[in-house]
Amino acid sequence: MLLEHIASPRDVKALDATALPQLCDEVRRAILENAAAVGGHLAPNLGVVELTVALHRVFDSPRDKIIFDVSHQSYAHKVLTGRAAAFTDPAHYGEVSGFSNPHESEHDFFSMGHTSTSISLACGLAKARDLAGERYNVVAVIGDGSLSGGLAFEGLDNAAVLNSGIVIVVNDNDQSIAENHGGIYGCLARLRTSGGTASNNIFRAMGFDYRYLEEGNDVDSLVEALEALRGIDHPVVLHVHTTKGAGYDPAERAPEVWHHVGSFDIESGRKHTLISGDVPEGTYADITGAHLLEAMKRDPRVVGVTAGMPYVMGFTQERRAQAGQQFVDVGIAEEHAVTMAAGMAAGGMKPYVAIYSTFLERSFDQMLVDVCRNSLPVTFLIDRAGLVGADGSTHQGVYDLSYLRLMPNMIVAAPRDVRDLKKLLSLSAEISEPMAIRYPKDGDDMGPGIQSQRDFRVGEWELLSSGGDVMIFAVGRMVQFAMQASIELMGKGLSAGVVDARFVKPMDEKMLVEQAKRVRLAVMVEENALAGGFGEGAIRVLEENGVATDVMALGVPDRFIGHGTIAEQLAECELDAYGIARRILARWKEREGRADA
Image 1 (cartoon, rainbow, N blue to C red):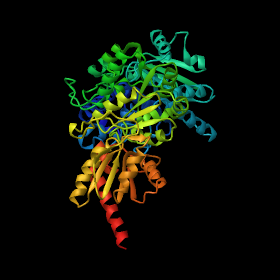
Image 2: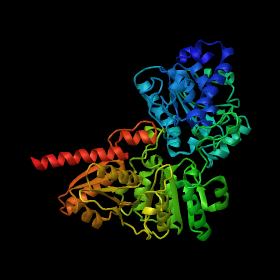
Image 3: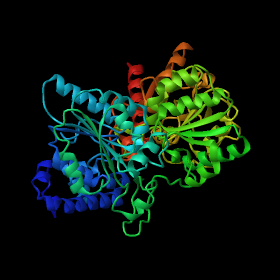
Image 4: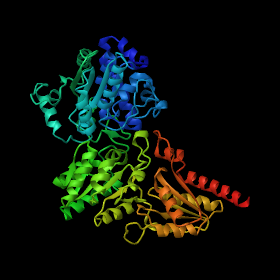
């Protein structure tokens, strides 16, 4: 087995050229078996195996800089740069993240996970190289789906006039996560069908030297094409046509649903856990999609908007077909999605924008200025809010409450479970202001026993249980952990109650003040960064109202949280039931000690 002898790119260079196809087969099998066991980004990585082997055959990493856009297609790169055991040995599965990470290897230059960044990063490295008078190659690998992002256009615009050596490899598999959307893709299609000779060439128009390679999954052709670019002294685009999911038939036939997978059986393709593009019944995404589709049927003003990830709002291919013109996928272009929604709202529509929490960060300015400054009725459906598990530090949705709270006119809500989401979606139809509803990845149903029997009103909280010593004010998913923690505390002799603070803005200041005054310790719990979050806001309200109760805020600590299971991350942040109870008990003992003194 060749992989047993590949510890670095030097070993790839040392192989006889005739051995490269076998190496590609072994790398592909390792990625496939690893993903079948523990999940991961499968189809993007299968499509770039030959390209990655060729890059490390030709270039000299880490002296030469290879930057993978998004980096969710860097598995083969990791296998070839000393991390093969994490893909070949079940005892080491999970030891590396799903994205590039400088803490793992000198061959990873950036911690990445957001799209459209590679060209700008490559421009910076090339400029630094030239200013330092050094000589090395800089290569950016970007997928066609990522080209729809505004930052990619900005990077291309600057790279074209660097007057220096930079290689941009456009990995074109005619696919984003779902299908591509945008005018650039017609140009790419004409280039593919013409073998790169079409006169309508966006790259040449911008000033690039341009090369095309149809055989993007042929390692020998790739090596030859890349060798011609090594040491180049001007900007060049190498446009390669690859197949997403190459080498695994189910992924080739349905690349959208095999983009990111849970565990599955390789031989049958039968899924054991969730695969991207799936919308399991009862999840937050499914409830959102079903609700919006019904709303679209009743009201032609309702429009769903997403940025290249339709399953975020539960819009499967079937639902997209049913929605027709009332569903808009702008491609990977979050800023455009938000400002386009603002335009729709100004034109009398009722748009719903569904984007992952981590990706919505890119649209801060558009939300603040285009939506909130104009007080337009755009509803933001923020999926993957809070801790997200194995996607790692770049994907944690733990900053949205902080930046949403500071936006004037914005209503911010967080359902404690899927039942509450339904009510908040119904409420959103009546709202004529900007509104954000944020919820985690997985659906929870806390059961009918603790469900409110009344419709929600903006800014109104819910008292779930009373306590004489401690009151826990919890947001979103933290409500269920707060309730479990209250039971733990009762076993320690503390009477602890729980309030569902479902509206982070505006807050239910009346309930906050009243309930805080009745206890000796008020605790704010959120699955968000402490800085600028719910806890800080609640404590300010108590201070302004002269409430003397002891207070504490629990949330995500001031550091990036690495990959792991959600349970592991909650425990790391002490936001599981045990961690919440332990910290409250410690504070109580500290408080009582001060009182005794």
